[in-house]
Length: 279
Image 1 (cartoon, rainbow, N blue to C red):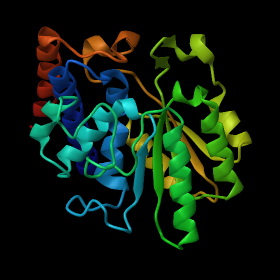
Image 2: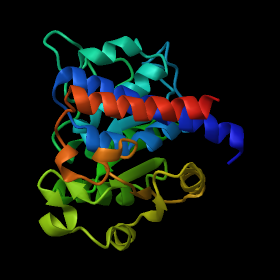
Image 3: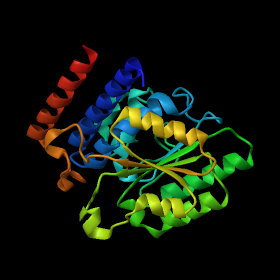
Image 4: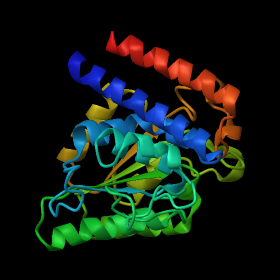
């Protein structure tokens, strides 16, 4: 990846992380850990990979994105806001009464959200249906869906994978954020899905395993998707809470908001990072 493009994506990812902290702090609730681990793929998807029009969110020929792990809405909202779908200032209204930015994505209220999600497993199932519909209509539309590694403990997820393989949905890209932690502890201890890559291959996918917090590796993975003749899976090894020192790889930050002191520490770290990148 050329240095200019990488720098732009690093700036965008840092802005997304700042939005995650801003929104969850003001909400006094939310899910920062998994939102932060996914910030880089949000940046790549909305900064480079997907076709969309922020000023025309329902543009018929846009690529579709479904956040199957819907509790990580703060990351998606932040990406959408910084790309102009709605004002960045509105991130502060996350989960407030009357706000259109609630704890899980709502396609009826949030510009740029293609599917309402929250119940784990349902998002990727709908995404597979979107990919099938695009094929049926002869549309050059790709569908992307981000799942958590805890989420793939749901049986419905594997039914969706079978569906994708059955109908050879080579326009469908499944992205698994494998940060190793879920609400109750480590995925290994709660319900290990390993080996995820071998299982997905057995289910008829082409698969790549990458460092999901590295833009060069993300670029290579999406290039491989575009060459795939089968549904494609990107297994991203990531760090939960990445970008905020005290949140990194700490399961407790799966579903709680920073207090004022923690907010100030996080925002200073991210602001310093942004200034360094913009220098």
